[in-house]
Each structure stands twice: as structure tokens, then as C-alpha cells.
Image 1 (spheres, rainbow, N blue to C red):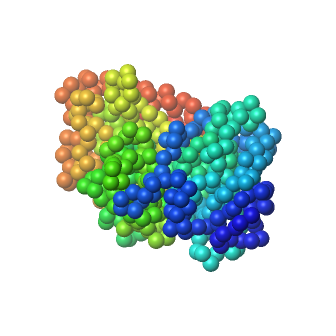
Image 2: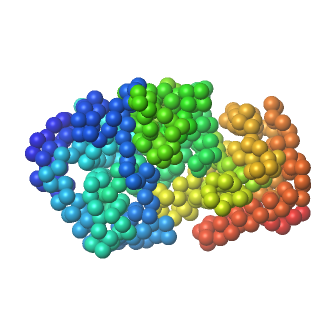
Image 3: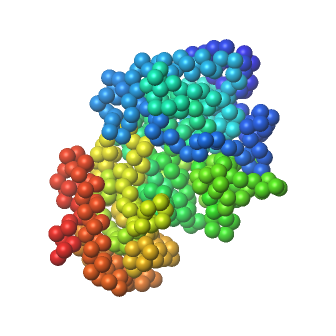
Length: 536
């Protein structure tokens, strides 16, 4: 077997079980991976210098094809309502078939870290069939110094073989695609999909399982920090403005997707960003756009014109077009990926019902309630047959990546908020003056003004009222913000319609939370919105 590149020769591929490989390219640099990928016909070179690859039939994650091994360690710690099971025997058979499939192949290996906090990082070795997948994961995780590779000892291993075809009858999976996660041995097998995002999300899944045992809170969030060390964490589902609002040029970006909260503070899980590029423009998001015009960035499923210029308005392959780049491509990104304990937590929602205020202050119990709820809303017209807003609840703002029960993460967050006296705010970037179709989107200027007041601490000194529906505190007046929008009911022409809409949304929250009630204490249960209060 031909082996190229720096590595720990004492822990080679044979220690994992590989045999008969044609070649193994270790820890290759960006230029080398470009050459391998282009020469192998995996990708194209775009004008500007980015590498452009197609992921084929899978243009996003395959959550229904993800399985977790059930064993003595996981049977009582994994949230099986949210995670499909695979037996130890099925996984072992799958792994032996993976290793057999790899015989005669040329593979690429990257030694990387998940987690910027040196006390809690996870050394990960990633074997990939494609060179561009090796570049992708090199961009997305944290890269050790070249001098450290000789002593690198992986604790987690990912094997990523898109050409592998799974057999449901033999492997206990659902289709020819499989993402099999062995949390005990920290092994992930990915087959039958070329979507590179499966690799990074697998690292998140393992960290989300390991860290709570150490009292560390894993969070699906973005984070930034001011010059005074005032760290802010932003939770929010897709379409709430999480990436846009955390990308503040006056503050340092820690990361945009997953973080941990340890005794040392907040730390990024990643060393890169994986940004959506549909409708991307230099005018609206100049920083992200600039990354798509340079060497080292990987573009997924982006259409190129005749001159190989990316057309970000073309969603013919998928609306989920992406750019993967190292975080240092963003000018105000943190050099360390670490920041002090959060001073402020922002939970973002895009309420298409037009009920929620633009900002509200949360107690620790209310913060846990809204964290477990993970609410946002789909707007009318996004899907066939959707004629009015629809509530979307994704617990902990990241249900697909939670191996443990949500209450574990929620209780950990509540305790950390109380211990460190963190200010918590719920920010609505959705609709005001009526529901979607009647009202209009919350003015971005107002959102930024309120957010600035919250982050500076000034908002804590405002006069507050108690919201009749949700029980949280809402500022009565904030400098630079139209007072009317602070009281959503006042923005509606039809007050009775507002009351009816509010009662409907309250019911949705209550119904959604039923599954969590047995797992939380009375303080959190009492933080629920109330139909009775809404009617008064």
C-alpha cells in the first residue's frame, strides 16, 4: 500500500481494520486535495477559485437512515423516541462489509479535532473515499498543527464511503443509505450518500452524547463576543436569522452552528462554517459571499454558468446549496474559537402568527421551557396545501442531533443560566401587525436595536409589562423602536382576531409540551403559556 503524508505511524489504518488498500493519503493540504479531486473527476474549479462538487441524489441529510447502536452503555442513556436502533451484531457486520468494500481503494484520511477547548476536544480521524470530502471535513473541523500529527491519537473514527450500498435485510437499516453511529466505541459509518454534511453532524451527535456526562452543555447555536468579553449565544431554527444576527461586524464571531459551554466558557465545536448559498449576494451578505470567491472553499450543488461563475439564484439542483470554508475566511472570526461564560442568551423565533412580541425577558424556568419547545413557524405557501401559518417545534433547537433526552440538556442549561446569572431573551423576527399574509415582517432595524440594547445590558433597566398569553416580561418602551410593535395586539387592526390567534398559538405550545411535562419540575411547568390568562 502506498502511504503519503504526515501521520502517527504507531496508529495506522491497520489498527482500525483496513487491509488491502491501494493507497492512503494522510492529512493532505488544500492544494493537494484540489489536485486529487480534479484529476479524479470528482469536482470542477469555479471562477474565483472555489471547488464545486455535486452530491447526487442526496442533497441534504438523511435523518431516517441514521441509526444508533443499542448496547449496555446506550440502552438507558439514549433518547430512543428520536433515535433508531441498530444492534451490535448488525453494526459489526456492517463494519466488516465496509472494510471489505474498501479493499483495493484509494482513501484519504484527516486527523482533526471536534471542540476548540483543549480540555474537552475530541480527536477525530476521518477516512473518506472522495478527495473533496477530505477537504470538506478539513475545512469544517479544527486542524492540528502539522507538528502534532506524529503523536495524534484518534478517539473517534468516521468512515465515509459513498459508493457503499447497504442491505436493509443484512444490516438492519432502512435503505441502501446508512449512517450508523456506535457511541460506545465512537465509530461512525456513512455509506450510500455523497452529502458531506453527514460527517460533521456525526461529530456533533457524538459530542452531544459525551459532554453532558462531564457537566458540559452542547448547544446547536451561533455565538459571538464583544470587546469586553460579553459572550452572547443565539439559538434558532432555520429562517429565524441566527446566522445573520450573530454576524455582527462590531463583535467577534465564535462560530455559527454548534458550541459547548464548559467551566472555561463557550467553545466552538468547529473550525469552519457551512453556509447556505441560495440567493446569496455580495450586497446582502458580503462576508459569506467573499468566501465563495476564493481558493479553499467547497461549494455543494451550486450551478456554474458557461464561464464557471457560480449562479447562487439557481436552485435547480437543490435549494440547499452550500459553501464549506474555514472560519478564518471570515474577517471578524475568533482565532481561538473560545470565549468567556455567556452573559446573554438569545432564543430566536420567526412567529408567522404575529402574536409574539419582538423581544421578551425570560426567567431560567421560562428559558428552559422555550428551549425545550424550540418554536418557530412555517409561512403559508411554503408547502402545497399550507394556507395559513404552521407551528414548528424542534426541541433544544436541534432535535435531529440529540442522542440524549431533551430534558437532560434543558436542565443543564437551566442550572448554568441560574449559576452564572445569564440574561435570557426571546426575540421574534417573524410577523407583526397580523399573521403572515396580513401583517409584515418585523423590521430588521428594530430587531437589531433591541438586540443591541439587550447585549449592552441597557434593556434590563427598562420598564416591563407581563405578557397576558406567555407570562414573560416585555419592555414597554425602548429608544429608537416604535412603541406600538412592543405590544403585538396594538399592531393588529382586528383585536379579536389577535386574541383568537394568540389562543390558538398558546394551545399549540401546551400540546407540544405534554411529552416533556413528566421530565421537568414545577417551575418549568408553571412557565407554560395559559389559555386562561389569554382570555382575561
